[in-house]
Length: 278
Ligand SMILES: NC(=O)c1ccc[n+]([C@@H]2O[C@H](COP(=O)([O-])OP(=O)(O)OC[C@H]3O[C@@H](n4cnc5c(N)ncnc54)[C@H](OP(=O)(O)O)[C@@H]3O)[C@@H](O)[C@H]2O)c1
Image 1 (cartoon, rainbow, N blue to C red):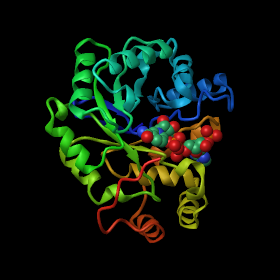
Image 2: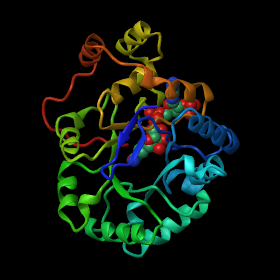
Image 3: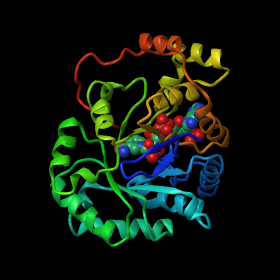
């Protein structure tokens, strides 16, 4: 599995596993945990979750998946903006740790920007880090102006990633945020990289490229995100067939012709646009 290097030198799998909608009863927690375990075995050792997902239910599924193999996994979770205060962050973190059955989170993210000043959230993250509860912290859904502000607050430059929506249908970050973060060595963690399995995967341009590679459209969407060395993709898959497909994408390299056809179907941004988020 290809790796992406975080600002502190830690290498993580370029394809990780999302968990939104896990723990909600869909396929059942056991099947979801099995899917995550299969993904870990196939090298997708980064797992992304959040206290928001199923209000803790997804973290419990993650806890089942990593039981007995915590050290193989790079664990990412997120705090709600309304919990992102001095006192709220450590309390939320303790609840997340308990649900996942671990004593440390590898990367703890602010899920999106809310009313708590960034400086206060960063100070709370740094206290958690000093206390060994988290190994590093980052943010999610921050636009370029937010990121500049973040890097200006005390310890803000320790931000490890910004997790944002990125797939061929939503490529506005290529105009500003992505190159800016690349310049700072802060990876982009691309969420919804296969467009939540919806309209994106019906696109004829993706289908044509997929056919040439003997791959699926989802694999082409992922390979497209991964063409940039600073991007980590975190597809969510509870279906074991999807898990296998996603783990195999690192073997696919898109050609200039492939990229041109995808550009024709999903034109790259020509100007700054508002950061898209789900
Ligand atoms: N920070 C944020 O605000 C934010 C927002 C959204 C998402 N996220 C994170 O990013 C993760 C991924 O985003 P997402 O869940 O929104 O969307 P996604 O990963 O783009 O899509 C997930 C959907 O696509 C299907 N799928 C996965 N692999 C597939 C494949 N190879 N072929 C066909 N279908 C496939 C899945 O089906 P099955 O489950 O049936 O396999 C599921 O229905 C989330 O789970 C979450 O961890 C973060």
